[in-house]
Image (cartoon, rainbow, N blue to C red):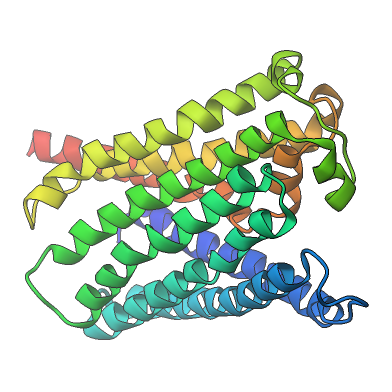
Length: 316
C-alpha cells in the first residue's frame, strides 16, 4: 500500500471516528433533556406538541446515526484488512439506510414554525427540515439498495454522486435559512427563545466577518455543490465512467474548509461578529454536522494521491 493511500485511509478513519464522537455527544445530550420535555404544566400550550415530537424523532434519528457511525467504522476495519468485499458493501448499505432514517427524523421540526406562528422559523426550520427529510434520503435509499443488491456495475457510484450533490445543497438551504432568519427576526422570536436581540441586515453590512460568512454560505456552498455535479456528470450519465478523484478531494477540502473558517471566526473572534444571532447560535450550538470540518484530512491526501497517480501514468 502506497504512503498516500495510507494517508487517505487514515483520514477516513479519523473522520469516521469524529463523526461517531460528535453524533454520540448529541444523542447523549438529547437523551438527558428528553424526559423534561414531557413535564410541562400546560400540554396544550404553543410549542409543546411540535417540540415534543421534533425532539423525540430527532433523538431516534440521532440514535440511528450513531449506529451508522459504529457500523461505518466496522466496515472500514474489514475493508482495511480484506478490501472491498460483499460484506463491506452490505454494511455500507446499512450505514446509508440508517443515515437516511436520521434525515427523515428531522421532518417534525418543520412544524415548529407554524405552531409558534412566527414567520422567522419558516426559513430557519421548516424549509430546511423538509428539504433534508425529503430530497436527500431518496437518492440515499436508492444507493443503499444498489449496494445491498448488486445491479449493473457503476449504478452505486451514480447514486453516490447524486446523494453528495443533494447533501451539499441541503447544507446550503439550512445555513442560508439561518441567515435569512437572522435578518428578518422580530421581537416575537426573542420572546419565545430569548438570548439575543433582533439584528436586521446591519448584522451583515456592519461586520466584515459576518459578510464573509454570509457570502461563503449563500454563494460558496452552492458553488461547491455545482462543482460536484459537474465533476460527477460523466459517472451519472455513463455508468462505469471514472470519477476524477483529484476533484473529489478538492470538493471535500473546500466543504471542510467552509466549516473550519466559519467555526474559527465564531469561536476565536466573537468580538468582531456583533454578538450572538440565530445564524451563529445554530452553527456553534446546534450543528450536528460540525464534524465535517475534518473532511480536509481526507481531501488533501486524496488530491495528492490522484496527482501522483496521474504523474506515474504520464511517465509510464
